[in-house]
Length: 343
Image 1 (cartoon, helix red, strand yellow):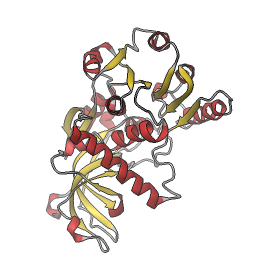
Image 2: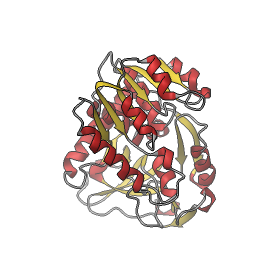
Image 3: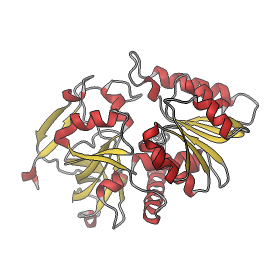
């Protein structure tokens, strides 16, 4: 096992994709309560794109190994862990550390991947799938017959969100550039071109009475339009600030502004609600509950994949050694789904 050697990608600071470093070392040994996972698939999320710019809300200090999630096989177990886990394919939500050939993870944080689901398929649905599932079913509580708007309907989270919403019986309006409209129509989504159309005006034409939910990863000034698209009783779920990705200055300020808007809107007596979605909310205070909910939600997402409600959207697969190319592809805005990294 140790003869393989450890390979990991290090983010040394605010660098261009070519500045990411490949580091070699010894394969770590699991401690008490840990498992050693041989990574089979990890991926590039919007979080890592922000981290590269030093703009992710609570990223660690440089240097560090990025990688929000991974799928792989348990190679070894530490003291206090069921040795029967060895040889099991599992998924894990990490926030950082996944861009490595071998990763130590708390055994309580891994979720088994059902037989018949490939590593790359599963990888597209860990952070993206859990985020989409929770926003749809736990936050907005979307029901059959409702109308929802998904901004960035071709993206990593958006592409899962539109499929889960359609499976729940909702009508979906999704924004994307024209090249993705045929696929969206095939999924029963009404597409709106955010590059050439006045998005808010077009959505008002499609839903004159307002919509029941808007899922907004863009943030910035456009979040006000998203709020005004809501029907009485509607829900706005803000889960990012993509519009500020390339801005200079504090990476925390855009999030604080969003939180301020959410607080003010919720103080208004109009029956509408706004949320800023944080996947990690409650983890530090109620770790056991957080883990149980993660397991339950990811299990639901994997079941949706097995039923055919969701299709894994793999934009491309590249090895860790081609991280610069993979990062540029993920940031290009030209792909649908997720860029997956393999060992």
